Length: 192
Image 1 (cartoon, one colour):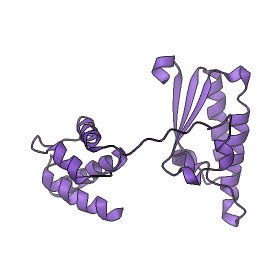
Image 2 (cartoon, one colour):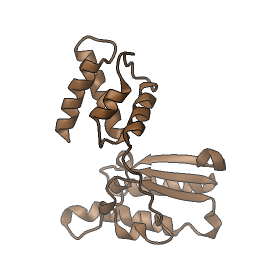
Image 3 (cartoon, one colour):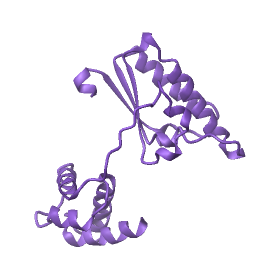
Image 4 (cartoon, one colour):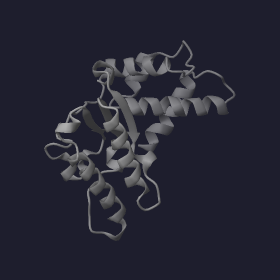
């Protein structure tokens, strides 16, 4: 979307901007929104928005989260006709944890659900990941991996390869083989 619209793209990982100091996270959010407004058209993409916008509550440990949600609401409501070139997008795999006020009209009101990849999708994801710097032996069959990982997400396939790298290094190998992938599958699958 950003390249098609020639917009600046801001990828914000919620967990990376949260600090332990009171007011710092809110200040980071204000600065991000202000910078995006100065550089419109712009897209603010909040990855793992549930880490910033979880459901508010009355518990003693929820004051921090309540402040973050209040700041996000204030910033989103500040986008008016003068900021028509600013788009806010959030992603999560835990939509039930998002504060409902963030999901109201005029905020994050469109919800697009991405289904789990099918067999062919997992083959393509594995091939794509293989090309992104993982040294996977030519003998590894992506179709066997796709069969093994029925019901897995792309992120889980990525973590399978990350784990396989560790197994390969610990075994003194420079390439990921089916042996490392099967060991990694057992480890990764047992963590789920």
